[in-house]
Image (tube, rainbow, N blue to C red; front, side, top):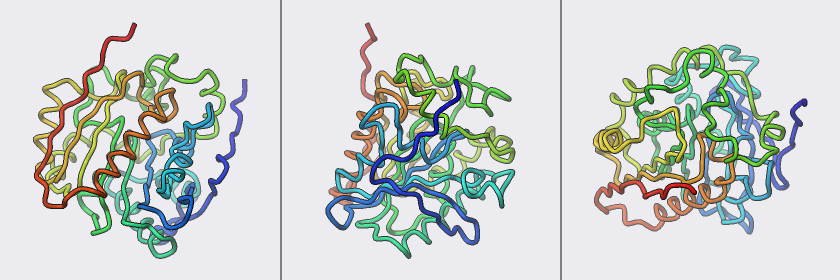
Length: 304
């Protein structure tokens, strides 16, 4: 069966951003009822596109429409080497260059659209690497926090590699019954080839994270799916992860039950997105002088 090309949800429109001369396509859903509380910039993973955050398999999977209903503007950006930038960047970019390009795109967005109290980054998988590096190296005063799912700091011993990693193989999704039956039809339009420079840069992350983690100076939340197969998220690994983020004023690590790697496309998407937006609400209300909070992962009961 040929995958269907699902259009964006109602209220979501396509825009283009100028990232220092590089065109980046994006999906935008503006806050209902006036000025946004803040703007959530969503950054997709390898082999996906901005539509990852506008799931079509069931109502209410879309982060864009949910965030807009709750007073946030949500901008989902096609990373360099995807969408509109494929022409000028047929090989994509490595992580470091992608962070600089994303920072330039955010400057363009700020100059044209209201952002409310500021910007939060919500990123998945390879996009989490880009978001964390952007936060560490290119942070601005209006960057308020970052949420990362599907990305840690140490790969699992049996993580997909090589050609399978480049394809985002089905094994990495986790149990397929965690996704609505139509997911692999409606998601056809959001799956894309992994650019060669991005693929070549995948193995650098553990070393790069070690070098930049202490420079992340905004609140951070990591979410690991119950059935995450790419990354280590055992107690030892999570203790080490927390120990590296020494400058984050708030640090939370959570697990999402009933979810595989691609959380935003599964049945758990709405629950996960609400948790993310709740974290962002907490950041908006928090006392900037509060001490670092290192929250442990929630306990997940065995599935019946």
